[in-house]
Length: 316
Image 1 (tube, rainbow, N blue to C red):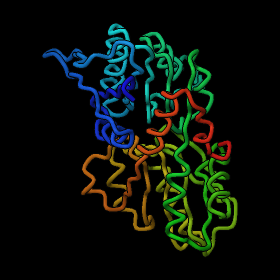
Image 2: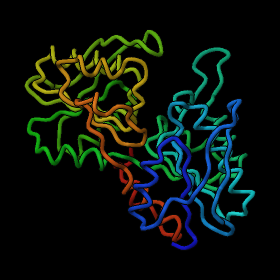
Image 3: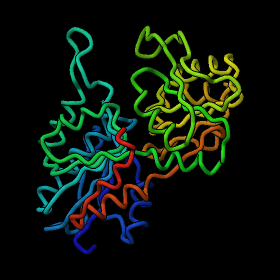
């Protein structure tokens, strides 16, 4: 581990520290701030020459600042003669812009991949991408982990009976099926129509949900609008309890207020890929740590060992 270094920006230093605790090392010292006019300022304060450097930096809110910190950190470490640089993105920002679905729009997820590679990253480690094909946007190795085991272990510990896993849309069926298999639960699908990026309308519930405990699974919860609509519709269909299992708690806009005010929703379970602001104001939100998963992946990559066992998402 002497040749391993973990560096972090300001996006999620608590997660980086927890990863280091699992690895038995300390976070390498680095100055990451801003000049008076807002430019990102970085200085690595430890020798990383010849080391295997992992930069832990989810590109969450404030997205542009955190993403720029990542790029500048990569450049600083590259110029400091690091042997290998791995960008660790527990949450990959701009992932929802992964295709050209309207005229004259960019594919920003691809642009982000180009910028990370151009800055000097040799490898990317990420978790629960919004679209699996984003791995193909990179010309460098990408290790894509899944938080399904972390989330499923929580529900298995509750020993829930009569559970049904619900996909919030047709595109999430594959993920929901993997959860249903691990939990030994039924499967249902919310058929909805999206009127805008922020607004959806639930049309039908496909599957048997009456009298069951529903677990809505998704990769991202942003404003929470579509999730709350699905929760309320499930409650109308006779569901006794409703839980939501989400990998990345973006929680933008008035998402927290929506979650707290929704009486039909029992609990939202997220991971700490994105830090939760004001957790004391979010009693309905349960945060699970993915630090053990990321730490094990980092250790295996550093030791040139296979990490295929960590891809266990039942081929999500």
